[in-house]
Length: 426
Image (cartoon, rainbow, N blue to C red; front, side, top):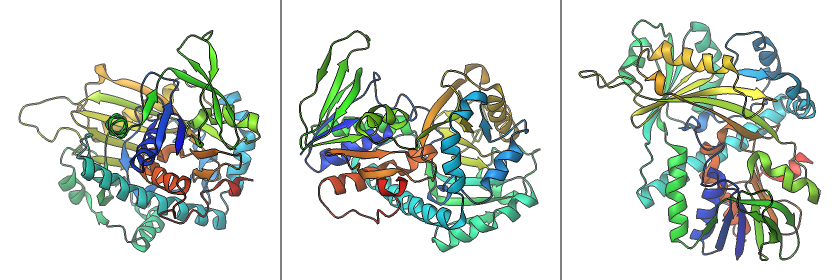
C-alpha cells in the first residue's frame, strides 16, 4: 500500500518504520526541518509502563484545585487561555469517574507494556544506542507519600511489574549521587523500566525507515485532507508562507500523527477531536565533571512523587522535566514552572549541573480528556489516526505504531483495541 504520514515526531517516525518494515510505500510530511523538533524534542525520556495512567483520575479535580495556590504546583491553569479549554476540562472531569478511569487505565497500561516490549525488540534488532539507562526510582519524601502510594503499589503487583520498596539507605545504594543532606523516607524501585533520549531514538529510527524505503519531506506543511478511496493531501512546500500550494499524489491511506495540530486538518472533514495542548517543561544541562566523583548526578531516572518531576541522565547531561500547563502559549515560559524544576534538581543533586549552560524547553503535549490515545480508522474514507498520547508519547510510541500498522495492513492487532478507538469519543 501507498501510505502518507503527517508528522515526524516520535509517533510519526515509529509509524513510518513499522509500516515500511511491513513492505508498504511510506511518505512522511513534516512542517519542521527535522524529526522530533516539537513535543518529542526534550521530554523526560522515562519509559515506565506502571506509571502510565490517565490524568483523568478519581480525586484529581480536587487535587488540581488545591494546587492552584501552591508555589510549586504540578498543574497550572493559565488565565484566559484556560477558559478556552473549559469544554475539554468538562469532559476531563467526567472521565474522572472511577469506572471510566479503570477502563482507561487498563487500556493505557496494556499499550504501555506492549510498547516497552516493542521498543526493546527494535533496540536489540537494530542495535540502537540512544543514551538509554536501566532503572527508575520513584522518590517518596514523606511517610505520607508512601501511604498514598499503596494503591499504586497494589496495581504494580497485580500487573506483575518488578518493583521493590526501598528505605533511605536503599535509595542511596541505587542512586549514590543523591544529596546526603536531603531527607527521603522511601522509594519505589522499578528495575526493568528505564530512560532514553527520545529525540535521538527518532533520528536513528528515521534512518532505518529510510533504509527500508520510506521517504521524508521536511519543511512541508499539510494544509488539508481530501478523504476518499484514494485520499489526497494539500501541501505547501518550503517555509515561505507564499509558496505554491499543490496536491500530493493519491494514496491508499493517510495516517495523521500531527499531535496538537491535528484538528486544523480534521475539523474541515468533520472530525474535530476533544484535543488540548497541555504544555510541559524541561531543563537540560551538562553534568559537572569533578575528579574523584563518578556518581555526580543521577545514574538513570528518578521521579519526585511530591512534585511530579522527573530527573533523567542522558549521557553526560541531566534533564529535569515536569509541569502540566492548561491554556498556556508555546512561547511564554511560566517562571514558577522553571523554578520548580530547578528546586527539585537542587534538592536531590545540588551542584551537579552546569546551570549557566542549561537549555529550557516547553512543548505542547496533545492530550485527550480521558487519557488514552486514539488509534485506527477515523471514519473518513482513507484517513487513519495515531495521536493524542499526552505526556506518554515516548512510552506509548512503539506500541501505538505497531498496533496502527497491523490494523492498516489488515492484520490482527497485537493487543485489544478496546478504549483506543475513535468511537469512545463520540
